[in-house]
Length: 136
Image 1 (tube, rainbow, N blue to C red):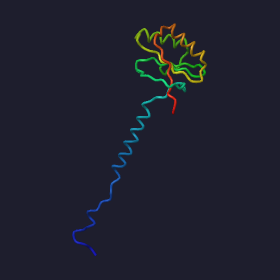
Image 2 (image 1 turned 90 degrees about the vertical axis):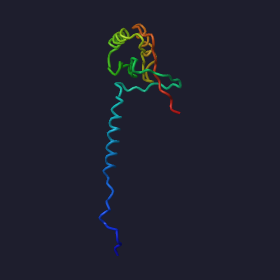
Image 3 (image 1 turned 60 degrees about the vertical axis):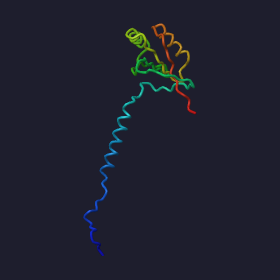
Image 4 (image 1 turned 135 degrees about the vertical axis):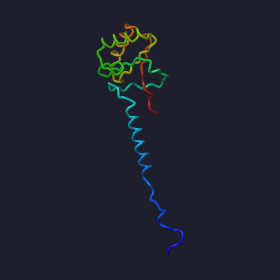
């Protein structure tokens, strides 16, 4: 039995095009987000600390030191002598810059202290040792 005014011509199946568009936009978003943070040159696990503070990272010099003593300055791995001369040059250009050291938790304390002493001799006046907050 067919009712008047009701026809099969007006029925359309739902389109999946909007769903596909949203999926592709999310894919692009997460691909771009993954590229924003670049991996560090050295694999470092800093020690845990309960204290914390504000860091103006774009104006600081970042020194990475791995547990085997390898050094990197602003994502460029280099020897200690080159690192010290590069830090001195950067501080000559802008004396207000701070030096941040991100050392591995497994690093020998004597090695870290020696590096800090060399940096002091190179003219570093503001030095920060980076740690990470412990997980609760």
